[in-house]
Length: 212
Image (cartoon, rainbow, N blue to C red; front, side, top):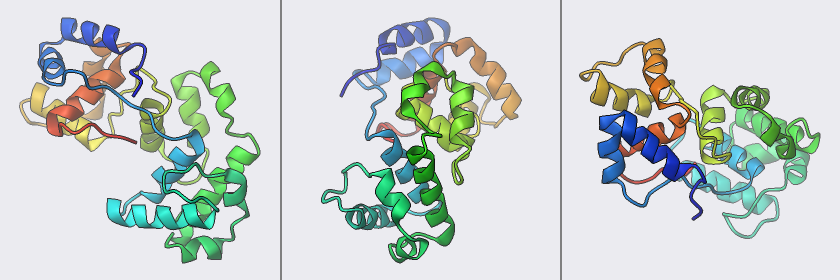
């Protein structure tokens, strides 16, 4: 799997400015962020998986892929086909009415080019997050995960993420979770590689790399 182009420079920078991260980086040799899927499929999976178990999400996803004429669970979804599905059809696959509406709204954004991946390289992180949260069912946390894991943006600090809060409390704040403003301020020294710092802090809690 292709390593982000900035990864080696990021690990040198972070190890040089933070002793905790230096130790965490040394403990995870050869590991790095990886990307999977196309933009629409990745965001659709994120919506399907909200607030349900991984097993339940996979079962619903497999049915959605089959209903859209794809033979393999890992196949890319066509937003045009998804947009044409009736809410009742999506509900029958196991989606809640709200999630069915969210999936349809996501498809509409792609079909109409309100979300156009070709324009994203020209957008800074906040502008892309703003474009993504315009979709029903996509909040800031989901958008930040997408920027990190799909767009490979190097400098995202998702302070609302419970795993990051727990890891920062453990390693830097004597086990106490500080206010989000304090987490943001502390993370300033990790710029411009806050995504990488976050990834290694997650590894300190769970050594198995996350795929989004």
